[in-house]
Length: 116
Ligand code: SF4
Ligand code: SF4
Image (cartoon, rainbow, N blue to C red; front, side, top):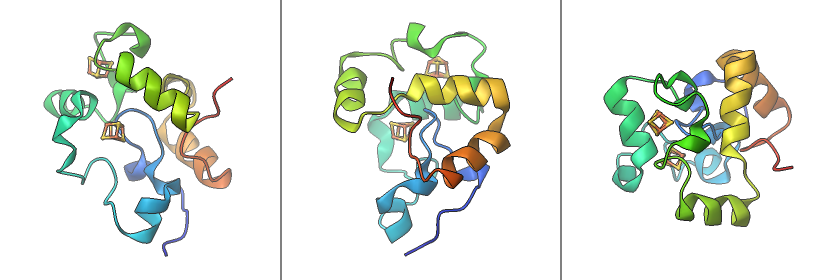
């Protein structure tokens, strides 16, 4: 089992923190960027096409919730089940930067900023 550490490379394109995920820590998932099986994810492919580190770098949408790739029916179900708030993660990255976000997520052992 890996330890939770602060590492900006472990931030997923959608803002989740892979570095606190059990699958990542157990070694059964390489994390978002390295997960070539995640071809289903439009957020991941969009970010890769544009060369962004996450939707926080998006030039098209200041608020990712306005983007249909980011905010759709499936993502709402996902957010409800996992109590995640990827938009809040992206906003925190925009406000505080990637390093501060990775530090916060690792210190608090969080995959997502808590949904309010
Ligand atoms: S939802 Fe997409 S962008 Fe987010 S962690 Fe999963 S594969 Fe990566
Ligand atoms: S907000 Fe939408 S368009 Fe912008 S990088 Fe994310 S998925 Fe792509």
